[in-house]
Amino acid sequence: MLSTMQDVPLLISRILTHGSTVHGSSRVITWTGEGEPHRRTFAEIGARSARLAHALRDELGVEGDERVATLMWNNSEHVEAYFAIPSMGAVLHTLNLRLPAEQLVWIVNHAADRVLLVNGSLIPLLAPLLPQLPTVEHIVVAGPGDRAPLAGATARVHEYEELLDGRPDSYDWPELDERRAAAMCYTSGTTGDPKGVIYSHRSIYLHSMQVNMAESMSLTDSDTTLVVVPQFHVNAWGLPHATFMSGVNMLMPDRFLQPAPLAEMIASERPTHAAAVPTIWQGLLAELRAKPRDVSSLGQVTIGGSACPPSLMEAFDELGMRVCHAWGMTETSPLGTVARPPAHAIGTDEEFGYRVTQGRFPAGVEARLTGPGGERLPWDGESAGELEVRGPWIAGAYYNGPDAEPLRPADKFSEDGWLKTGDVGIISPEGFLTLTDRAKDVIKSGGEWISSVDLENALMSHPDVAEAAVVAVPDDKWGERPLATVVLKEGAQVGFEALRAFLSEEAGVARWQLPERWTIVETVPKTSVGKFDKKKIREAHRLGKLDVTKLA
Ligand code: ADP
Image (cartoon, rainbow, N blue to C red; front, side, top):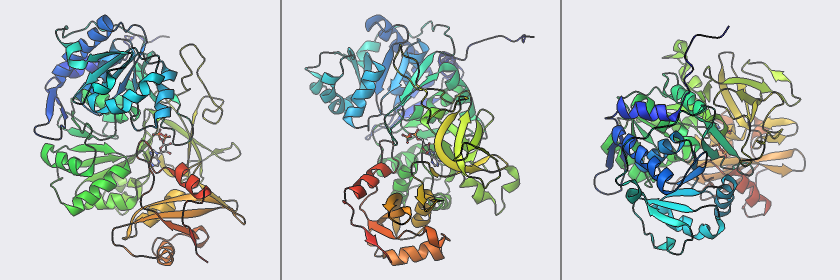
């Protein structure tokens, strides 16, 4: 029997129309670095998105599912692009501005982007690449920055504001199939080549509802969220869409992502929520310790993208900013789990133990663990295996060009269609996920696994350690052993013996897991989205570039 319910497609244009009318007075606030931030209401964003869509269609000839790329910071024009492009039926392609040049070129060509929106401040990055981007016919420039480097471009160059000028404030958004492509994002390639994930209108719509749920980020129109996570990093974790659904104000840092301006925007705009990867918060913490600001408005901070060290969580708790840990990936839109303790643990000694897990699965994400021999493992809080997930906002394949079959590599998708995350962990009977490592980072020592993340967290809880990354290095006897690379806090003098003793005596690390190999580094190399770049550390070690001390 079929249901008797209406079959209305779940579309981005619906989110836009809803946000810009029902929540028309909510705002996108963009930091400008000097003077007043720039403020635009959702109603204005709605009208400007319509104008942008008219311009793209009538002036630049965008039709069908053509890709329109953005090379932009987090700001209100980027939000307009987020809504205008998919709502008119085209595909938004956000470009990660921190990728190495050759990867950016590869990605633009792979997606065959014909129109590219760029922030003026990013022209120096784009201009030298243009000769290698034959598909790009139109460049639309928004915001301040010298246009001169675009002078010789073969693509036509337009000014964003001039393009919008005088166009209608409304657009007859087409009723699309909700399964059509809305946006695409390439994984940042922490492990291997970038892979294109294409989100549908339906997947983004459902994901946005989950983001707002009380068990996830719990955002309403009384909140302002500081969106530090870039709009090119998995749709800023879904926040631009989720905020338009619920009227949540957005505070956008534009290019001011350094700790000092972030601290200033928190103190002056008083956001209630913020989202970013751990490295951003490490930097902010040091800044706040050096120069305290009033950050008391930030009741909730969502941290994900890599494991949040428990020491960081405690430090933020002391400042009154409650960290909520979450796990996800480009392929999962990204919301996979959120670590909100269950009711029975709140206020008890168990609470912190729940908060440091990666979190609990929502109804929309099914999970299972697979052991090394392909066997299904139980949710018993002990059996460690590779996490596989399935659900309406989880990727089932990668983009392989407009006319090609999507890619389903066997190391990424199971035969029955589940996404193999490459993350290794355990799941408790209550559905809380604890990741022990990435499959590629785990240290395989004499047939046993050592979690690099556990060692890093233990090291980073030492008062003299600013940052620490642990990687597997080849070892004649054990196959692999851990190498600890440590960044000391300014002026700190602690030796390797003392650090090793701390790991074993204070942090409870088992003796056989204690690293013998140690090195001091100035910084831990980071990927384009701010994660520890362990590929680079392993490479530096392989080339003999690290000054390694081997303890007896
Ligand atoms: P990339 O794979 O290029 O790093 P993603 O941003 O998609 O790009 O990264 C997803 C991966 O990040 C996950 O598979 C996982 O390894 C890691 N990750 C994300 N959130 C967490 C977290 N809270 N704890 C540990 N690892 C995390």
